[in-house]
Amino acid sequence: MKKEKKQSKFKKGLLIYTAVMLAALAVGLTVFWFFIQDYENGMPVHGMERTMESFNEEKISDLISNQTFGNAGALEDSSVWVSWYQELIRGKHLTFEEARENTATTPTYLVKADDQPVGKVTLKVTGKNAFKFNLWGFDRLDVSEYLPETATYTVTVPKGVAVTVNGHRLGEEYITENDVVYPELSNIQTYLSEVPLSTTYKISGLLNEPEIAATTGNGRELTLEKDDHNYAFSYAMSDAEIAPLKTMAEGVVNSYAMNFIDVSKQIYNYIMPGSELEENIKLTVTGFYPTKYIASYGFDSMNVSNFNYYSDSCFSCDVQYNFHVKFQNFTVEQESLPGNMRWYFVNKDGKWYLTDLGYLNEES
Image (cartoon, rainbow, N blue to C red; front, top):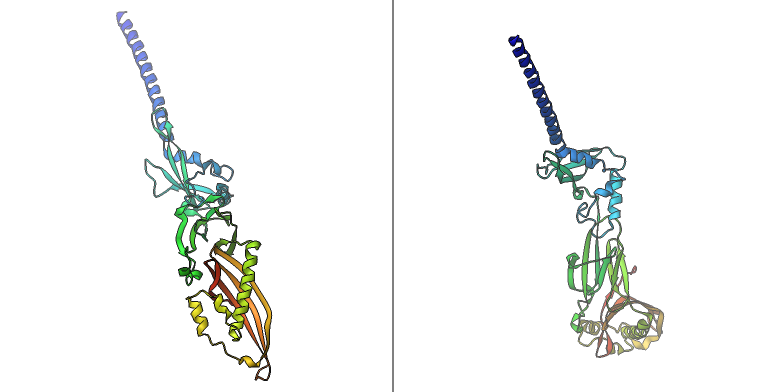
């Protein structure tokens, strides 16, 4: 009887022990299961998988930041580049793989659209799970290595003029040349108390044609000459400013033509004293035809236009004319003397002097 009671107690204890061990094992397996699950969920690849759920044309704007396009979008509205990127991935099969920059502490993945690289995604720690494994989430998208072909523009303005591109005022970091003497004024700068200077800006990485504007601090308007991606702003002149200068220049044109047929030397009243131009005119042979055979002379046409303001003491204008001379009792009956030039005037002691000139071609 006593032996049977002992066996019964042993069996009962064994059952309890077994039950406890099974329970402990079950708890252990459950904990281990959650441990493995948390470990798996803490791997960066799952953070990237979650990120890829937003990698489509509808949601991609949520992943774009100021770093996404590098310096490319600095002077353009971000929507321009977002639209470009949406078009880049639209309808494509998107995949990802570890990038060569990938590390355990900075997971980085290369995203491909139809097997073509379109960006790199870097992850960051966004939290911890129950077993203190890192949880990874999106940090930034970088597409600077995969940008499309962009354009570069140069903008030349008078020194001190402010330049804006798409509403952004350009700073000194965009200046490539400063305090530059206008090449066309190189022969006359010695006659100017203050030489007009120019500044050139260079802007790169623009996807669309920009809106480029220039403003002065003195209220004077500007005119623009545009040659492909090269913009050149210069000061404009009002009709009221041009009128007296045009009248003066027409008088100089008349004296200039009279000099070449040797009937008047008044041209020297309008030429800058001591200038290279004065010397050249003195050396020019003007007595082509004996004045005693000249019957008449005059202008068939004269046009003074395209006034360009450099400063209060310097301007240029284009001069086109056709001057004829008729002869009597001479070997020829008539000669035509055309002119197509750009003249540069300098104001000295309140008087305008023709100081330099350049010949223009027929297209100018």
